[in-house]
Length: 97
Image (cartoon, rainbow, N blue to C red):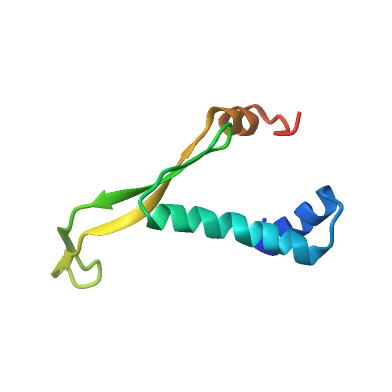
């Protein structure tokens, strides 16, 4: 599903025009990104949680040349699936049931 498809689904489900649906979707993702930039964990019960994880730098290898390459430390978002989503996907049930 693309962002445009999500916006359309929200508009249909909430019986609203596309513009307010786009605002809702943009606000949701914007709030999620802002919270994570601030180092906060975002939990959506039954769906999952998002948080930032710090990774140490290390010495890697260029796969083409085999030369050692220094990989700097980085901070990346991590998603952990919630029990409700896991059951819905694994059991093939609809989340809205």
